[in-house]
Image (tube, rainbow, N blue to C red; front, side, top):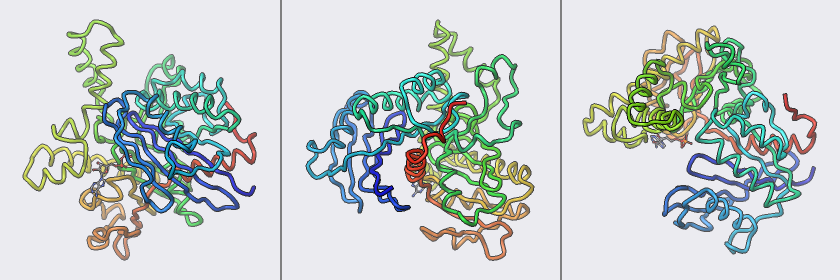
Length: 410
Ligand code: ADP
C-alpha cells in the first residue's frame, strides 16, 4: 500500500474530535486535528490545528446539537469553508466506539446493518454510544464510497477472564449481554503497542483522566479491568461513582421515585446522579477537574482533600488487587490527563506500595515528561506514557483495509 489518508472520528457526550492521518509503508503522519466541543451550548468551540500544532481556525460557534457540530467537521474536511485547511481525498474513516455490545466484538467495516446491531446496546455506554452511532450514519451518508471501520474500546478487553466478565446476576440478565466490557481499550492497546517489543509479562496500566480505569495485562492481553458494563463502574472518577454498593443506587432510585412518576424518567435521573453528579465532583462539591481540586486543597478545602484522597486510595486498592491477580507486577504505567500530569496523584497512589515492589523516585516523578519514575532498584518499573488511541485506530483501519476478512460478527 502506498499512502492512505485516514480520518479518525472520536466523539464524547459533548464533543467530536477528528484527525486526518497519512498512512503508508509503516509510517503514520498526522496532517491535522480538530475538535468541536461544547455540544448542547450556544457557545461551543471549534478549532483545527495543522501537523505542527499551528491553529488553522479557532471559533466559538453555537452548537445546540450534534448535527451542527458534525456539519462543521464535514465542511472542514471538504475544504473550501476553511481555506487554510487542506485535506486530501479520504481513503478510509475509523470510528472510535466504547462498546459493541455482546455481538460486535471485533473491529470491522461498518454497514447500516452493523450500526443497527450496535444501536441495540446503547444502554451499555449511554453517554457515548448515541453520538457515535449518529456520526457513523452521517459518515456513511456524506462520504459514500469511503470505507468506514469501527474500532472498539471493548476489543482490547475481549480476552478478560470469564470470572471477570460475568456479572453476579441472574442468567436471564446475563443473557441480555450484561457483562464486563471495560473501556479505554484503545488507550491500553496503545500502551502495549508503545512498549513493544519489550512488553513486560505482568503489566498494570492506570488510565486516569476525566474517566478513570485500570487494567491488569498479562503478556500483552487484558485479563481484568476496573470498568464494568458501562464506564460508570470501577474507579471513582471525575463525575462518576465507580463501583458502589447497589443498595446506594436503590436508595437514591426510591428517593427519585418519590418525585418522578415514570420508571424510565426515574432511571434517567439516577443515571445523571451516578454518572454526571458523583465522583470527584460529588464528594468535593466543587469540581470534577483535578487541577481545580489541587488548588482548592492548597487553600485548605477539606472536601476537595477528601475527594482526591478517595480517588488515590481507590486506585491504590485496585493496584493491590491486580498485583494479587497477576501474581506480582513487572511494570506500572500511568496514562491519561491525571496520570501523565498530576505529580501528587502519582506520589499518593504509589506511597506505601513498597511491599508490592513499587517504589517511586520522588525527584524523577517531578520531572515533566519523564518516562521512568521508579527508584533505582525498584522491583517494578513505574512509567508515564501518553496514550496514542488515534494511532491505534489508524493501525486497525490499515490492517482491515488490507484484509477485510479479519473482521467478523460473533
Ligand atoms: P478525558 O477522560 O476527558 O480524555 P483527560 O485524559 O484529558 O480526560 O484528563 C482530564 C483530567 O486530567 C482532569 O481532571 C484534569 O484536571 C487532569 N489534568 C490535566 N492536566 C493536568 C495537570 N497539569 N495537573 C493535574 N491534573 C491535570
